[in-house]
Image 1: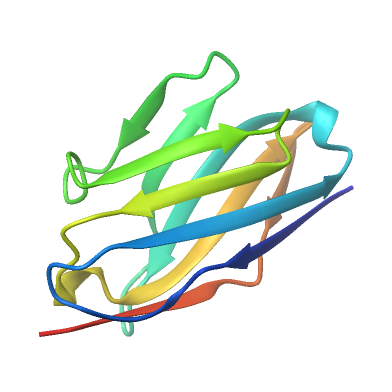
Image 2: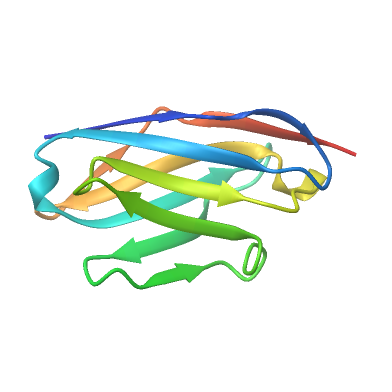
Length: 115
């Protein structure tokens, strides 16, 4: 079992920055993938950033060059640094991981960007 708890969301003006954190606990040694997803009102949940076992990261085109995913402390904490935020980034952001073939989700953290 893996437990993911996000934090760091909030209200920010356009052009600002936020750093989301995801604290992982439980069987973290078995985690092979960390992702950040987001879901805006009325839209489907979408993949924002992904990092695998090898450490290579991939990003959605909409956030490339603005967002950075990182893993710190032997898989204990996953970060999403978000710069140059715009109203289109307003969404609930979810931490996601895969461990031994099972998927785990955090409860989500709200990010609201005002224009």
